[in-house]
Image (cartoon, rainbow, N blue to C red):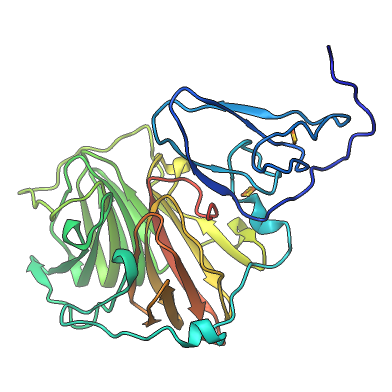
Length: 357
Ligand code: FES
Ligand code: FES
């Protein structure tokens, strides 16, 4: 018998401002509550009767399938979270760095390798003092690799004082670049793109690239993991013409709001990158509430200073530092700089940096 509809609320109730992390059973169908009225969140208990809402069904296709069921009921990708919960309250969920619990969390400093190691494989790496390798005017170092517990991405620093660096490539890898200083060009195969601070660049699998310019500092996330670059004898001509735009500059007109913060997508599907996603954003003076995500994340601090917190440790962060956050590790970034912090991050695999839990 059809369910009777009475006055339908215009919007779903909001039982929670974050998603529910769950590991599902293969073949089982789950009825997600769309109305927000169920007492068995995130699942339907029939409380929608008399409204226009209906549950949304999802059948798990793998054993242990990890999902984030939307708790706020305002996602555009129901039944899963799309990050919309961040914009429902008008302010970002914060934490008090001076609470008794937080004051008891000890501060750690960097080890001999420049990395301050926090809980669960999280670290903050100071790039000053890193041992750099050199090749034809290009200095470089690997900051993140398998030995750090990374599963999906490795991370490199490149410095070019002046001129044209050697051609290099990471076979079968996606390379997501971020220029933090200097002016120059990113050559990919037969093409060339402007680089300036805040510009993101994307090199597709099978392509080689080269840096040209003065005072260039470029960070690179390489996905999946790679030990180091290859240096071909010349510049291979390969360029995937299906994706002609490969450099995305900082552009205030393209900012997206996330509560009282903003971010801009740099490398994403629009330039052909489906699983590696790069963003740039500003963080105001505050400490974010501790949260986790299902993607692996690397961040570079482009401006400002603060404190990186995990469940039981904390360490200072400052301009130039690289932060690594493995999947599912509880963490929180505090900005202690009155001028705010600017950061650029790469998530992999993922396409939406606002999904957290
Ligand atoms: Fe909310 Fe069924 S109780 S959709
Ligand atoms: Fe609803 Fe994230 S919890 S969009």
